[in-house]
Amino acid sequence: MLNKRWVLKDDTNAELVEKLATSLKIEPTLARLLAQRGIASYSEARDYFRPSLDNLHDPFLLKDMDVAVKRILRAIEHEERILVYGDYDVDGTTAVALVYDFLKEFHSLIDYYIPDRYTEGYGISYQGIDYAKQSGVTLIIALDCGIKAHEQVAYAAGLGIDFIVVDHHRPDDKPLQAAAVVDPKQPDCPYPYKELSGCGLGFKLAQAFYQRQRLPFAKLEELLDLVVVSIAADVVPITGENRILAYHGLNRLNFHPRAGLESILFYSNIFRKTAPGKFTVFTREILINDLMFLIGPKINAAGRIQKGKKAVDLLVCKKMGETHELSLGINDNNTERRSLDTDITRQAMSLISKDPWLKTARCTVLYNPTWHKGVIGIVASRLIESHYRPTIILTESNGLITG
Ligand SMILES: [Mn+2]
Image 1 (tube, helix red, strand yellow):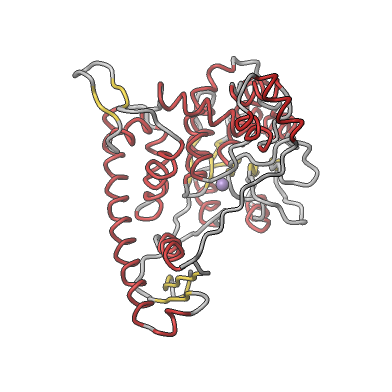
Image 2: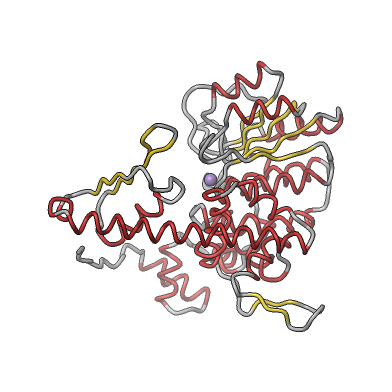
């Protein structure tokens, strides 16, 4: 067992703490906590306590955002077919749902694609590009992935398909042959905040589109429930712009959730009907933790057990009856995921406890070809919780060992 040693953070400037305590009329302890969060003035404290959508950054500060919006407008004008592409995890599926949802209002020739975790894997797949080609797509908007997909993007270009890559992962040095690359982690991107989620960047795309078309911002607030789910599930820091998006996203989710999220909450038992055919209310306030531990795993379960596309189907669905059906499907996926995860964790634990060498080793490496690929990552984190050491869990997939 690991011994915990608590070291209290005490690196704050006493003068600043006193200044904050007096100007805000708050206790010094609270002032110290604010100072530790980088807050140095009254106005910064006000923005911290009352996060305002007016303080969101201009989306056109993102490098290539203007090019991306122009390319989309050209696609709409020329009636091109657009494919919104993203990964099967929560950030990917919420990003795809968000961009599909907002563009659908302006363009009917639009579809989405989520690669299969087992046959295609993470990121842009050739299969996805071939699907686009067959469906007559000439523009792919890739979200939460693609920043290193040099070969795939070039392959698509060869087929006459343009790529707009909107990603928050770190790029490599090679330039991407895409129509536009929006990624704040590019060294030459002047955007002031680098920690947005993939779905958060999808929101910036929507914001830029609305700004360019002079459309009212209020409509965009409908998208914020998706953004807060991605912020929680992707575990990006809840600072700066993420904090504003998370705050307003939680409000949206508590008071006007989209049908798909509402039904997930309903089947998680934190939603009840007050009277038949009347108002529905949550039994309690929905918190960030609920998104991490309740909604996130359910959205992920679709990609682990069935198809990530099912999660997007649910997130963009506007019909009550259908959302319930899709939600029940995802619930089943999650139940199955949980039982696989418990079984495999139990098997892994017993392998360790039966083996004197493994028991005291400095790391855990386990292999069983029958273990389900979709849950071995979860099993690894469970083992870390009890053994506190680097852990590798391996299984077999398509004739290869993977982990
Ligand atoms: Mn992500």
